[in-house]
Length: 388
Ligand code: GCO
Ligand code: MN
Ligand code: MN
Image (cartoon, rainbow, N blue to C red; front, top):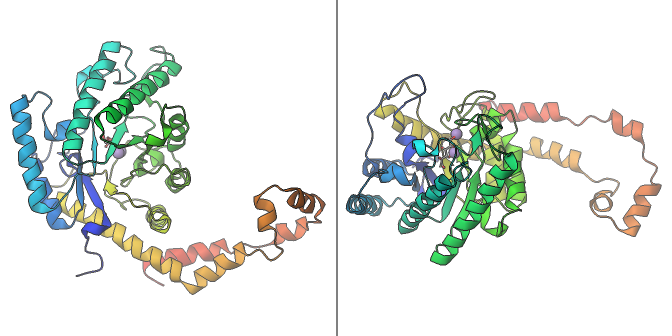
């Protein structure tokens, strides 16, 4: 078996809405037929994926009767069992229906907020029935076109009230979900509340039970704003808040492109995979992306294979980076602690304070030093391009 053949243990997941994307955009209609959820599951199982994630309405249409719902869910469960694919994450569609045009948890209309809670509680029931352990909140419509519509503090307060509510529902039901907030700066709203990973992490500390909540950062979303996604994920890891991750491809400053993982900025993706692997992150590697609009169904499966293959190639490159004697020698040298200041600088104590206050630092010598990062970056490039 090729080293780049995905295995269940790689924890690769796709959303029903990702491989199921039919290529609609604001300027054109669908270009592909809908693929039945059961077929998606079978196909993902064949390709080596570990799991499939879903919004309530990816599986059960919003207007399904209870009997229809039960039949759909039971067919889906059979496909899961037959293919060995699991459902690690579930979420709610709180953006498609016109009822949510002014947001769901942050809508100005309290009735809409109550409906959003009702819909989410049902979707949590569905996710739990399918075995999901992570519950994602992507507030795509939680924002505004005009700040004349509401005080942004109220938007944030209502968001908090609904999340606290749903956490209590979870506790009452004993589901024990890990809740993951997914930030995005804009699209489909003009501006979305909690635009970045950093804002979501800050907001979590204001919830009733912050320990139940983490983040679901998405490569495309930080990259749209020109931010460094690797740093955002590092902060989430550092805070113990990386509960899930959405991997894809994106050029900075564009609409949410959601390209195949690795389609853009190989170096950023390399450092991302290296970070996830070096950190021991044990959650799903979820691809929240879709095939180019030019593709037919065969192209969709090429897309899915490509996401997983690129991840595994970059994982191997990360192993080579960590084992490369020249790269490691440079890193060792630049991080070396020849004069023994690491400990003193890491923690204030009366002794460390005295030592640092009285030290005779050679500022000029420090300023003249070369860090060898040009060489280091070129070695990384050569490694990535296969010329090393
Ligand atoms: C987007 C989002 C969504 C969410 C999904 C899960 O920008 O469209 O990334 O794909 O991840 O709705 O909640
Ligand atoms: Mn996206
Ligand atoms: Mn996403």
